[in-house]
Amino acid sequence: MRETRGFYTIDGTNLEYELLIPSPDSTTTLIFLHEGLGCLAMWRDFPRRVAAATGCRALTYSRAGYGGSAPCTLPRPLTFMHEEGLKVLPQILATSDVQRAVLVGHSDGASIALINAGGAADRRIVGLVLMAPHVFVEELTIQSIRAAAAAYQTTDLRTRLARYHGDQVDNTFLGWTGAWLDQGFLAWNLEAMLPQIEVPVLLIQGEEDHYGTLRQLERIQAKLPRGADQLLLPGCGHAPFRERPEETLQAMVGFLAKIPHRTE
Image (cartoon, rainbow, N blue to C red):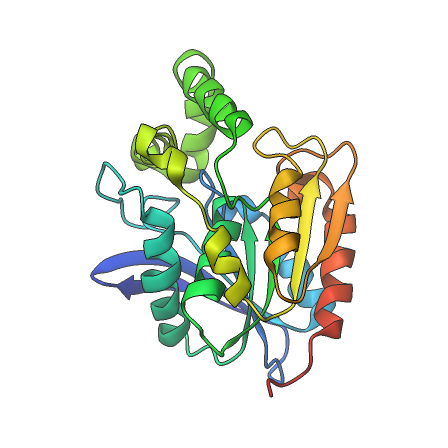
């Protein structure tokens, strides 16, 4: 498998990336969009495993303020996910010369994927794989983020996150909690964008996810014109690709096999 690593410069900001190419004949690129405290490295070997199993290219990158990418400016705007989905992600696709893509998002990354698919009308996007997506703010989510903020001050959480985010770990953590815990963020909602999404969608969620309930999936199912495939994982928390990698991988392989080889 051929591998390329480096930095994309988007609007003057360096963003680290890794591109895996299992075959010269690969025509579809899976774009991995990480969670609110994630980064390229926190996907571990999952993109490589998916690329090997499907023959698709796998492009993983860290957003500004994460991993080895440049820091972001604080406070993050409450529209930060819309800016990522509608402004940054299209530039990533253009810079990497992606012609046909499936967005693979986790948590905030899944919401960014929905924003892109529902708001950009980009014909290069042919499918979505959404793990633990959010389309509205739940009290459970806010409670869990408050608990994480407390743990950041009183446990080794900061040290563990610094392994991935280095010296900018405070920028990473405070940027995420600052936006989600802002009172103005309670009105954040993506449901109006869902009827615009015409591509196939796979929803994956752990039934023990402490950052969101199954109501998120119910709302998405109800408003997508084509509905969605679903994988619910009993005993699984917020990160299916880490906690239940085999089942998550097999669900993705089956889903991707059903997407037509070419767009109409």
